[in-house]
Each structure stands twice: as structure tokens, then as C-alpha cells.
Amino acid sequence: MKQSTLAASEFKAKCLRLLDEVAQHGNTLVITKRGRPIAKVIPINDLQRPMWGRWEGIAKIKGDLVNFHDDWGPDD
Image (cartoon, rainbow, N blue to C red):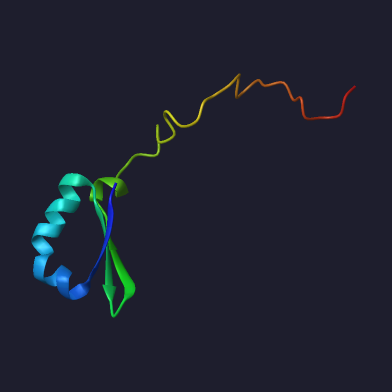
């Protein structure tokens, strides 16, 4: 995902085209006013991603999550 920063005046002049780019390519826009960031435009599909499966391909389950053996306790 690409993030771009632009002045509010430029965003105002090119608003519809920039919004199309956000929707089609997943770009993120940071809008500035007098050099300070004031707003961020992100694709709506980022906001609607379901929680289930979000870690797929990132985290891996190793072992049994319900009936695990506690190896962290004191040795008996």
C-alpha cells in the first residue's frame, strides 16, 4: 500500500481522481494544511476487514490451545 502526502489545496483541486485512486489501488492519502497533517484518507475495505482470519499467514498455531501442557511452571 502506498502512502502519499499532499496539501489540502491540491486535494481540493484533484479530489475525485484521488479518491478513485484510493479505492482502486488501496493508496492512503495524508492531507496537510500549512505543512501539518490534518486528515488521512484510507480505502473503506480496510475498515471492513473481518476480525476472523486476520492473522492468517502471519501467526501459526503450534500445539493444542485448549489442553496445553504448562511447561512454564515450577519443576516437580
